[in-house]
Length: 516
Image (cartoon, rainbow, N blue to C red):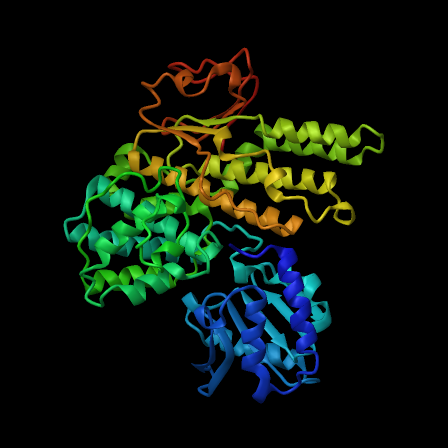
């Protein structure tokens, strides 16, 4: 199990005490960072390497002191050296790296001081070694826990789509097609995400397992993946005692994601390489909402045109859900937050309960982009409420994040005519849930994951024009209807007495037309 933040802080205090006299770059760097990663219960050699050679843009060679591809560059100096120059040197290494290996973080240190640069959020944290216990959350990315910045058309999302597309094309060309291929790809993408975000522990166990336990010619890769899917669908208490110990390290996932038996694909060396290339990619920076683009990258273009599939950007989704419900909820929270009376706390608690009762319905949800973004924004708002209810100086160390959150994926409903996007929508919702659980963990100092998956979004496979919507969600329980159906983008505020969820779109007190 992953360490709690309190346990990490205890380890960090011991580390800071042990290394308080370190001073020499050449003789102590590697031992220093081996121990540093152990603070987070991560073996340095499983994620990063020392003295990585890089050809700089000025045609001179250089060596990165510690390099974690796609995640971290460390430039270490002896005590008292100029960290500004160290950062400049690390920047030269960054520029010389291929795009796929460029990290989000640069750490420079002289043993006495840490200076961590987040290149995505353009934030820098600087502190002395002795203060490490209070700053461990800044290194949450080592555990797969980090704050996320979402941007439309981020190159990292496009590259991920291309990697999945190459694997799809190779499997399709080999004759592995249809339903089995679609379900297989969704499972693989979930595993890739899980391997880099703390669902699988330690990080990169999927990559290490596939690289070390399967043959280079790929002949045993398909059966090995089939067995892994069975393991992910089996509680630890029901697994056989003779199960390979490396495979036994994978957690029970549930959620029906790995439930159905699939035909076993036959891999060759080239196909195995494509899967390992996808494993090497850092999936922790992927936006689950970009799953729509992933879907389109592997979907037949003719089918996409015929069915009217359309990927809607996060920016445009926010233009819809803002005036529909989010702006009002945020305004209500701000009014409660500003109050000074003795009922403020109780009313904030009731507001959080309200958030946990709302329901959201997209009758033509595609890959779930509207549902995913709405869920993310609702969880973000709930976290702000929780921060008011449990202010930092008043928080009890024994408050578990699992006892705090009331908003869950089962408040979200959708209908989609294609089976493949239904599975993508479900999986992407679970991915976003994990990201938001990580955010909650960072705020409250307790590690929180919803694994095994016990709740699911309600995504029905069917034609919204022929399906009785009330069979999925009763009209009186429907809070909001939104989306981007093929016949025209419309979003509606559903009223308990107004929506008709059987056979036709709900009437609405207020409608907002998107700009997609």
